[in-house]
Length: 274
Image (cartoon, rainbow, N blue to C red):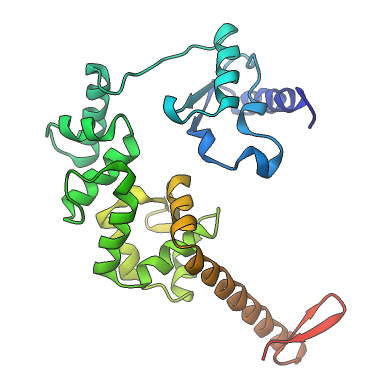
């Protein structure tokens, strides 16, 4: 949609959500600048955020000040002058420490003091949670720097779990939809690897549960980008292997239904997969 039409269409969508929901609605967008870049879509998250929201609708956007894009700074400035409220949390303030402590104590089930972890994290909650879990699992040292966390964590996990760990994470990085546990097993992923990652560093993953784990995806775009950038060759191999695996499955279906073994109909051409 051109110009302001993006924001107006999103506002209309929010109005419909409020009506369907029958009560007040809050949408939370955490780190929108970490998603798909503007160059990829010709638009970005901030283009869709209207100046005024429908009655009963609230939008909470959380962004690290030092990583906020130019479009985000400009949009937040305009919203703050209209109807929005702006809350700045100084990372090393007593209030920031209280928030970090409350989060980590809840997740860890302890009343430990996480002041040092708060200082190291500089307000980066995801980093604080990752490091807390990794140190408890004896995967990382407590003073691991934020910029080294993913690299050292991947190395430590691979040392314990072997090469299947990287294959598991790269499969998740190749999909924006949750992968079913059965799908991962059919792709050769050892269930024990999944269980170990979930037990040791659960904050790396987002789990859909219904009594048991139904779907798994990566918990953050930052981790997806790290995997793409640092394991680009292995990721390309994983995508090619997935394409081959999918083609073989389609061929098997074709074999069972049409008797044309070893071939796949693409358009008007039948391709051999030998």
